[in-house]
Image (tube, rainbow, N blue to C red; front, side):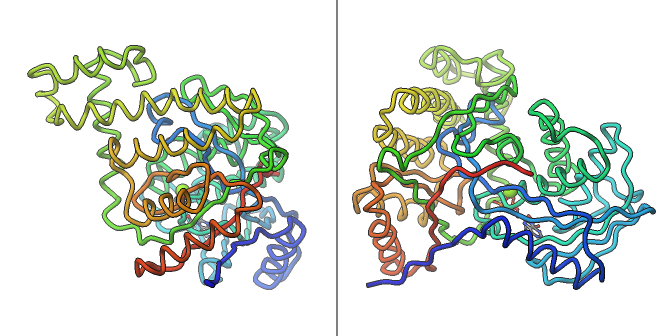
Length: 407
Ligand code: ADP
Ligand code: MG
């Protein structure tokens, strides 16, 4: 039978020790402290965050670790075990949109954004290491931002990390870092998951009000598990796609006279308005395509509510069918899936999973499948076999248990 590549999470103690060791080796002193933040999965609610909708992510046990020491000047020295271990030096006063490129932008961008919001920081030395799968749609970027944000908050006595309201402030800084300094568009779900999650819970986030509700999420007590599949699909041609989806949603909202698609209460009426002759002419969007995009967003927001009620009422196994419906919507109406993601979901369901879907932006990245605990290994094996017979790169697997937030 085929080898299954399990991507194990590090213990927090082990991850901290690794970051500390890297720091000491590179900077020749012990760090002031080590902080960490999780990657995330998303149970349901895809491409809803930038539409003011609902999402239901959860923290992974996989975390990014940042060992940090304060400096007396405005210099930042950075090293990451995942980026060749080469030291990069940046003057904090030169950081602005467009001045920093590469992975370093995610780190100094957080310091920049905190200062933009009124904090006074100084320079720092930082050593990073991580077991969050890289660029796999499991949000290694927000894990990196979150570990740095919570560390700087503690080192420079900003006091935001102590409660959820303060953490919202850190989330906002991480979003600005990613959007404005790293130059990557993101809707805000990833940073909230990294900083506002609670262990054993999924995070119901209302992206319009930014309110959260902690939803108990302990699948094992129902004999179930959530299998995460990193497809390792090469991200090709994705750059313009995310922006194009956002543009279509904005154009549709403008025609419907609402601020975001969250406001759409009558889907059929909205679709009729959008496909009426001439309605979208000024925007240049295709009416039939726009209608499918809007249908995905509106039905997906409803599916988040459905999954929350199923979890609330202990009907956990029924979540599987909702995941599969979401996948069909993302594949056919929102058109953000790809061959690898479809193979992963189809093979999972054929192997006995209760349901599954792609997660994240799409065109690669990861998928999830809801399985009975005793079936997890076999479902993973059959997905791996399906990839092999399709001639695809071997995927990676993990079983997601909801972990804790940045700390
Ligand atoms: P995802 O967030 O899904 O993993 P992204 O493309 O949003 O994928 O973020 C990946 C990028 O984040 C990497 O290319 C790198 O620039 C940065 N990054 C994430 N984790 C680390 C790390 N441990 N060390 C250095 N850079 C990192
Ligand atoms: Mg990311």
